[in-house]
Image (tube, rainbow over all chains, first blue to last red):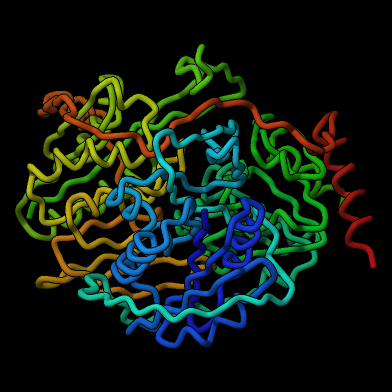
Length: 312
Length: 253
């Protein structure tokens, strides 16, 4: 039975997660079909024609950008026509807006933020995290021979190599998009580009209060680092989003990433786990950040910051 | 203006973990419970919409057992008007699609003008219940909303994509939105408000037919540590010295 991957693109660019989904599909085995929904799908067919893809389903739609009703209607039709055993979407903001709806409407199996999938005697088993990534769970789909899985970005390597997929044009009449793309708000130009820094000092919720932030701005200067932050600091309005590391912020890869008081939410880790050397200081010995850190210390971040300041 | 906010009481693990006997979940004794962070933003947004409209009602709906009423009381203490809690034993540890089915019955009965959910819960992180609920209710939806402006028959919302890119979306109303953190600043519930919230009405209903679950946790376990971090011990001064050594070595050249 086949695997259906739905390509994701934004502003004319294929999202890297698409190639990761293809890797996951290949790993599961079975013919792999990649659906490309776009005003002109041919603009993306080369990019998804990688090793392991058997068929590209080119679906012309009226919308240039993602709209959830359109994606749902098209993918619903493809599921009915093709009966894939697995529908692989990214665990992305776009897929969150229609993947669960497909499962609810068609009565399919469902799991999201999945980072491993395997076939156990014909039944799919997915792995995902619970409780702040301190616990993992194996998830099964009893009674379902079709499942919708939203896969965690960067959990699979991107598929490579040139493919020999056949391209099939599929016409799916979609009507009545009730949530319509109007335009983009440009990301604000920033005074600093954290993605080019060699050394990031990153702080999170652990700093406690806004008043404490200044101390870490000073520390960053003293030790020659650029200050970055995790999402809660931006949500609280203490720092502009240009400084934010993580899925909804920037992906960074400095030589050294020094994390103070960051527990390591999955979305944060996605934005920094490929850093050269990761050093984490946290009071919680079970903090998820220690799973990706190269060096860790269970300590009070204020005390360590103070001692660090003295050394420069 | 009637707004329904769906909330969840979430569990957070501390340093230690034990599993239930069937190993399908964490032993609840090891969890600290709270109102899901995303849901507090959704509640705040609902209160703002109600107050801007001048009249209306914010109804808090939750699928949870009796203990989960604490989270609802928190939302009520923030200023929501009343609550409806739906439960059946089958919902313990249920997948988000099944949860959405339980919520749908209740929300449909309220015929709201707007439904708000948090993007995801901090303990399960499926980011699915809201979108599944919208489908079951036949409502237009937008996921991961960071700004909301209600118009006449439509709403204009910001949808935050990966990397911080913002998509401006016009959505027909009534609709369901999943609310992202940072959209507003959730108000603190005063002690007095918390006390008063005890008096607010929370209706309890038995969930109806839920259908086949979309997934089932087979077992939970502590993930293998893998390589893991090399832990630096000693005093804060010693830790700082070691950090400086590593930084100097790795940023050189």
